[in-house]
Image 1 (tube, rainbow, N blue to C red):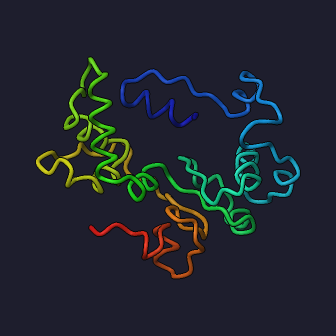
Image 2 (image 1 turned 135 degrees about the horizontal axis):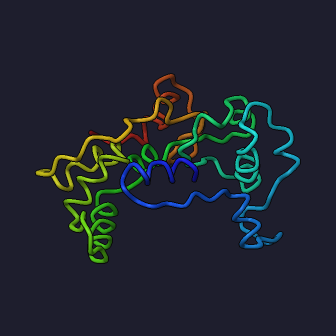
Length: 190
């Protein structure tokens, strides 16, 4: 959420960053929360950034195989491997999991509620190229005459860590899949 605030500022939006720990306190999440805290697991993590250990621990406790985050590099390789979890950037995740029909529907719904630019599905698609270049590229067939805008900060250096497919959660074994974050059977035909 801290980076979301910085990205929002670059795009001219006001975004107040919120930490997950603050949300837990402010919303008064109790023991019945969908993803329970797992302090024992968090304490056992060795190469994940201290501020993100509770997230990885909660994902493991919930048997999640994927954490979608802009902070991929904050999640330690050894910890991800030991827990059987992968960390993937939202842009990479959406580029591989969103269908063209979902994308079109989402942009049409967004455009119906907007009063400021971008306010058409086509202009929203073009704008998405700034923050989500992989998604815009994957969805280029939906709006073929529209060229997405250039990325604000470029694609992050690291968009995937782990050994589980972002789409199906199966163990990745071949070197190419371990770099892409997606197994051969889940890759989009480009």
